[in-house]
Length: 353
Image (cartoon, rainbow, N blue to C red; front, side, top):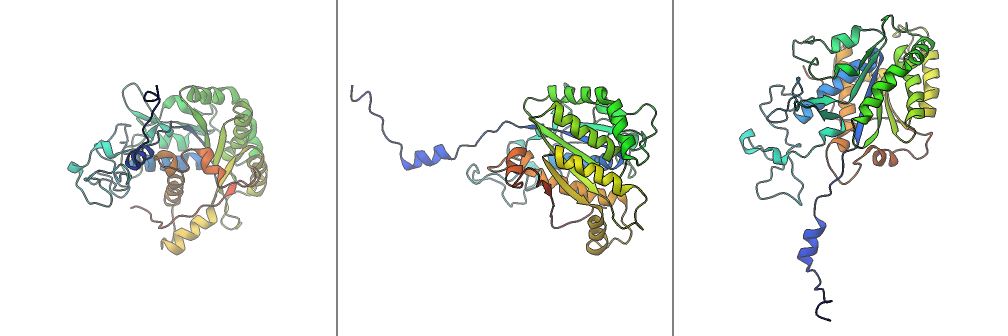
């Protein structure tokens, strides 16, 4: 009986092997809402960046190898993506190496595409994104077969059932009240789209809202959607990437932007769990002073925003031992619920050709 109850203690070597097993964490899905002209423009750049990082082609299919953002032809692998953890790396691990694509295999790729993408029946990757606008111009350009540089995007990438454009197509006219009222009028249609995406998720964690606080649709309809999400999904987190306007009146083309901003800030304070502040004035100053671009275009500024968005979600999309989900990431950044306006920092900044 004593021999049967005897358990030999583990040796230190066995203890070390047992403690270094990989921790499996279920991906927590995040649904992205792109509202208004600004929200859809920065959202489009954001999905381009994510596709490049995860090796997804414009038609939603996987590349043989993920490509670097500076190499759109997919000839060289991203070394950071193929870097194995020291505890799991074998004698041929690729940390800091310059291996050719023939030496790389998908066994080294350990990312979580399911956080922002889902796979369709034909194995295409589709973003968990809703494209919402009250006028069709920006969304139609985003869904066109070709973009300005004649590279194929995004017709086969997005789910066209997740596109909402108001029937009259008149927009909100940079009027917060008009955007809020039209958001209330189209409440059922937009909430049904959000419900369909949430039902398609195994473990939905929250929502990301991309918008501007100075216009009409992004500020007004975005404010209404924040209130609706808070009521409809009270236990889900809501993070926003909010573009703040140029406060210099000589650079602004919206006379009522102070009123739009104040009305939106109230909803961001009450209904958002985290607000990432993207200051348009700072973006222009970075492009002019640091990147030496005399007259930066909207696409160039949006690419900076997309870089910040992709960098701030890296720990959600790639496994690690810290900040694996949105709750853990925000818990270390937000001391009190009301103090949730976050500033971003990133270096080095660059803009592709």
